[in-house]
Length: 289
Image 1 (cartoon, one colour):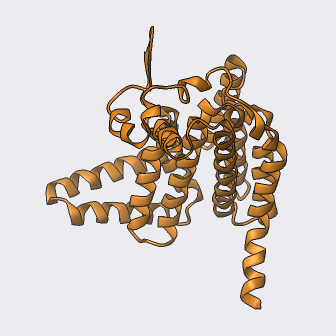
Image 2 (image 1 turned 180 degrees about the horizontal axis):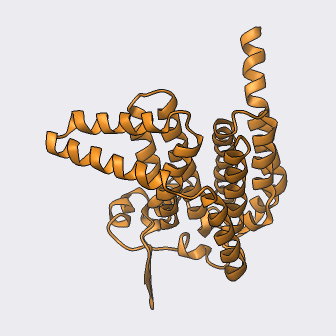
Image 3 (image 1 turned 90 degrees about the horizontal axis):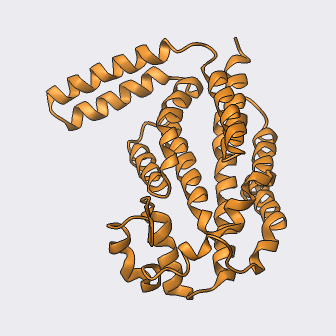
């Protein structure tokens, strides 16, 4: 009985987040394809189904007329698998987008619980709920083509979660999980490259033992590579610690301001969310000075 109550309590906020996602975006389920959706739906490569996956990983994202750009094989493969199982079905496509977005919000909640562990879990829930309800995300959910945005952010925060997990429990499988999630994000859309800076900075500011984390990574590399490679890694570790320690106190605030101005210049484009996230990180890391 006690175990079931604990399980119910742990599922309360995730279920509420999924419910909020369904309420706000359930009306998209009955939409048809729109605007850019034919890029990933009425596409001769994707319509080959699962057999197209090797071709997807060896060709560019869009090859059509004068268009020839991008490399986003993960999200494109998801549409190929979907076509293999369900054919061309907009209801299924919109349903999957909604589920992926709901799952992303839940993963964001668990990540924020870890980062804001000094606070009641109601705060991470409120932040995740605001993330769901923010109107700038409407296009990412309602437009099927923009599934790449959902996948990229999901993989990025999952990668950050597992690297943070490694600082608490030094199992090297978490490093592999983190790298795997990051590759998933990067090959969904390359804007995940920003997490190459966000991940080490978050580990440094939010981990109780950031230097221990670096030592664990150094030991992991040294044990699995030659002595020379181990020395190179240790040198890189010392340099990275020096650079991070030399960062100014207001680093996250400057990044937040930069994202805010980019949001103004580009009319949103996802920079508003980063402004909020970076401000949360800044105030959290400076509230105990």
